[in-house]
Image (cartoon, rainbow, N blue to C red):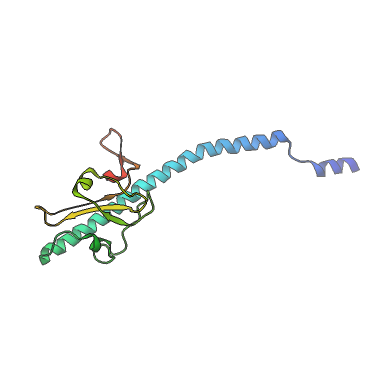
Length: 161
């Protein structure tokens, strides 16, 4: 009687049982991780679309007020990045590099949606109020792929949104 009680009290998992549990956890992880990655990419795509839309809406509202008052139609970089002038809050964070900073770019860079200084700036902005017609371009400073379709041939990069 004493030996049986002692053996049942000392019983532990066998190596085979532990390996079965490890394999089952590995299979579950293999199924879940890709779904989480997809959800993360979808969230980044939606966040960059939302951020670009918010800034462009702010610029449009600024333009309406400026035209009515006879001022330059598009905000300068300084006006764009000053909270309460174009946007009520700060410029949104770029979800691809975690930055909310905005850099001025040239007309050629804006036309090509060129990405530069990606580790220092989250967004790019070109403005020319002296052009006829005046021009402003605001876009994401990242060329990472998004989940946004580009007319069925592939996906757009963040700077193309």
